[in-house]
Image 1 (spheres, rainbow, N blue to C red):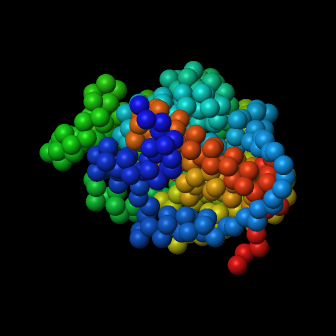
Image 2 (tube, protein in one colour):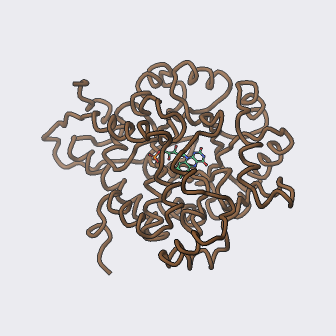
Image 3 (tube, protein in one colour):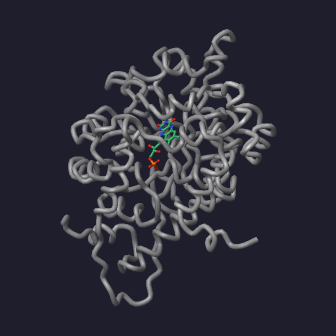
Length: 382
Ligand SMILES: Cc1cc2nc3c(=O)[nH]c(=O)nc-3n(C[C@H](O)[C@H](O)[C@H](O)COP(=O)(O)O)c2cc1C
């Protein structure tokens, strides 16, 4: 078999193949932003405006990407961001991503609305597993969920702050995404044209919200997505975060922060890190680009806690850009899912290899032996 690094050397190559291999409704869910997708596109555009000034004649360099976070050492500052409805995008996605995280020694964040449970993913991911919480309104459900996640061995909790309400997501509406998927002529038509996806579904079973179905009564299971909308999210406040802090014995990351005052308040309430993110442009179409929100937050927090970043990373250069602007770690949502949909588990690993190879190459090109030196390579804004 040809070497994937030659045939598909970029995330964009994986993206093109992914689109051909998954049903239309799954693609619409994965690829879309919200509104006219200005925020999603701006994330990429703004990223390109971050330029680096290389330094030459450093002799033979061996760039070191090892990154310490929350007392653990990772191969590089690249992680798998939480993605919901994972098994609808690619069957067996959660297991494959957890295995990739272990083989590459990077973090994998399992979403509350992923399609596998913490009990199944915890033993696969080991301490590379982190869990993302969409805050349940019902405190009993929340506390039970936190206990299950802790027992399953997840090493960090990511509390998503940027879904105060469901976004409009027009493309997703038009694609009639349902959870569980509604079996009708459209799905059957799509499935026939996407045989690899269909065989995967037959092997793995119809995707379900396995983490939260315990809390949904049997009558409502047919509309699990409705339960999610009505019961998860819309609740998060600093008081709620403080309650989570009391109940979770381990690092807490608050994800989806764009405002320096919010970032500071999260830290004051007990967060161990904040994740600068605009949810990949899926919530507020008029949002500031995530990469533009990063420097003011780094400045405000002034090293008191690590600053994590996501939204708009499509190659190792983007990882380097985020690190150069002060992020300690960069997470990718779509990039890993493109890899998975393009080549299954091998593709998820390949997506990581593309990002990591690109990051190391940028370090060579800019004369940086360690990640910290990238910060001195940021060129002044034009
Ligand atoms: C298909 C899809 C589903 C997502 N589901 C979740 C989720 O369940 N929880 C969450 O906190 N973020 C979710 N996100 C946001 C990602 O964690 C991340 O913030 C975003 O993908 C980063 O942008 P990128 O796709 O440009 O890398 C999702 C993103 C995508 C693309």
